[in-house]
Length: 234
Image (cartoon, rainbow, N blue to C red; front, top):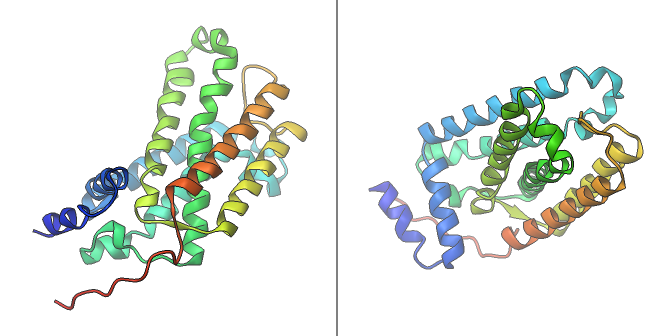
């Protein structure tokens, strides 16, 4: 009955938003499914940490969050999911999760980083396609990386169902994207690759970052743009 009431609330929303909200409700809307999502993010985080662990000592500690970008993106995504716990635990719809400025910053940066570093391997690995598909364990280091990182994108696309954004949050996300490009390609602390990246990958990464900020601006509703709805006392 609770799930039916939630689905009825979706009928007066635009079709795209209705579909997204219904998927978010199905995948994140009860404690069991939310726990599965947490488990998957934890698994991807451990894989990310393992990928960067051997090279972390070569990078200044202060730059680790910008260097180990995929692992940080998944960690931010897990934090965003954690904000759903009180809502899901109370039986409310994930689309009714309370919003405030701090959460808007968290969800926006999480979204941008998950999408950015979910799409980045499509460019970075395919710039040396032959090297990756013919390398030992290519099924892990090419197909496995592409598949797992596209899961980042799928997860992030659910965040606008419960999150909001602000101009400041979008600005911070864009600034972090530029800072990541500077750390990776200006200072040379780029993720381990089978080739030495050049200007092409740097510009592509910057373009992906800009696209992700634009997508966040289009996908999230603005904080405070909708009047608060009073809840019916049961």
